[in-house]
Length: 219
Image 1 (cartoon, rainbow, N blue to C red):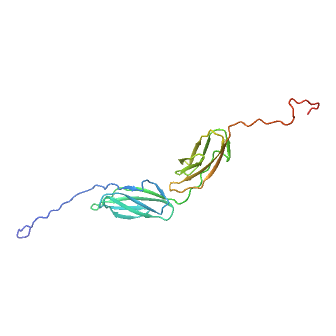
Image 2 (spheres, rainbow, N blue to C red; image 1 turned 30 degrees about the horizontal axis):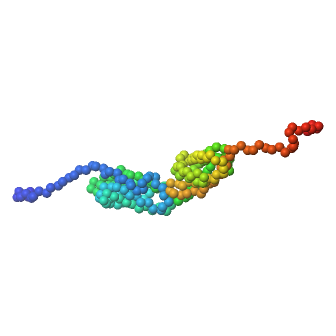
Image 3 (cartoon, rainbow, N blue to C red; image 1 turned 90 degrees about the horizontal axis):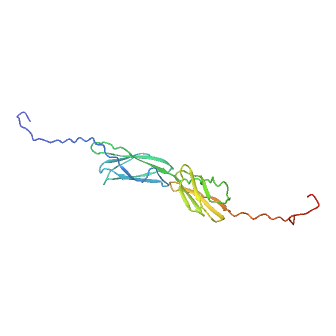
C-alpha cells in the first residue's frame, strides 16, 4: 500500500516444509556383496528416486542424476585388490541425503594354490574299504574332484572332504583342483587309490621238500 492508500494485488507464497530423508538407493548390480571378478571394470547399477542426485563414494567418486528410477556407474581398476563403495541420493530441493547402500568389489586375477591332500597320507594308497579324500583349500573356493569320481564342494574353514564309495577292487585315479570366487582355477593335484579286499595267497614252501621232514641232523 502506497502513501495514497493504493493497494497492490497480492502475491501468494507457498512454503513446503519437508524433513523427510530420501530412501536408501538399492543396488541391483552386482548381485552380491562382496562381489569377485577378474575384470578390470565394474558396473554399479540400481534403483533411486527420479531427479535425485546419486553419489558414488569410497574407492571411486562419481555423481549422476537419477533418471527413470535408475542410476548406473562404471568403475575401472587395473590392480587386484578389495574396493569398497557406497551409494547415496540427495533430494534436489531440500538437499537431504539418504543413508548409504554399500557394495564391495574384490578384483582377483591370481590363480589359487592347488588344494592339499592330507588324507590319504600317500599316493598311491592301498586299502580294502571306501576312501575319504580330505585336505586344505582356499575358503570360498569351489573344490573339484575328478577322475574315477566326480564331485565338488564349497571350501569352508579352509577344509574339504570327499567320500568315495567303491565295491570293486582295482586301481583308481583322481584329480583335485579348486576355483576361487573370481573364477580363477588352480593346477590339479593327483591321487591314486589301490582298493584290495581279497586275501593274498598262502606262501608256498619249497624247502624242505617234504612235510613232515625226517633227518638225522639237528638242523
